[in-house]
Amino acid sequence: MVGHSIGGMAAWLFAFLHPEEVAGLVLVDSSCERQLERWFTTEEKLSARRAGQRARARALAMAPAGQLVPGADAYRMFVGLPDPTLSAAMSESLHRQRTARVYFRALGSEMDSFETRSTAELDEARRRLGRLPMVLLTAARSFDSAQESGARHQAALSAMHSEITARSGRAVQQTIGCGHMIQLERPEAVIAAVNEVLEMID
Image (tube, rainbow, N blue to C red; front, side, top):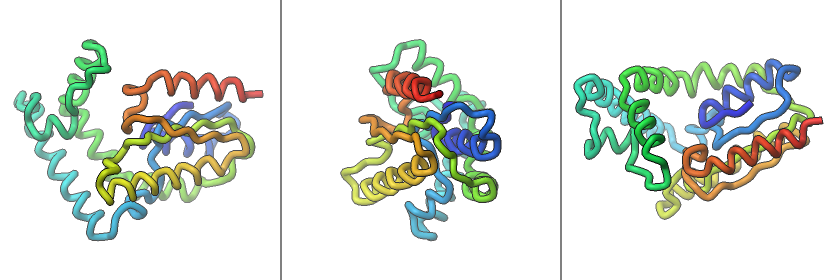
């Protein structure tokens, strides 16, 4: 199984619940349960949550009106600046996905469940994974390390990833020199991780 970000949490939850169905895991800059608690104080977390909710609400209103366009603050937040390393087809695909109203509805539901139901499910299911083959890719630039808070968050994320890999006797953690969207910025790293897990499978 391969999971990115919050999808990484879903992948290792499935591995906890159905180990007989999982031959190996590739976790791509996976989210972790309670990571917001380890990044922020209670007030910072509430402030960040409120800011995220306001931004998603603004994007939801702008998307159907055709106002979520390059140059808008919400576009820069949710779609991002053009990446010259991506093909024109990939850039257009990302634009279509991240300017669709349904995308922001799904994102809101995902974030609302992240620190509550998703974490509770992992708490209940958590177990050792024996010698399950696993590669966990940690993005080196998920945060702006030039800022004190960014460096602190990056270090905390790397530590949380180490805790995940400690659950398997055949797990490898690799740091990739890019941002959170490793599969877009460094797709060859994800392919290599899949091949590495395949080689580890008995």
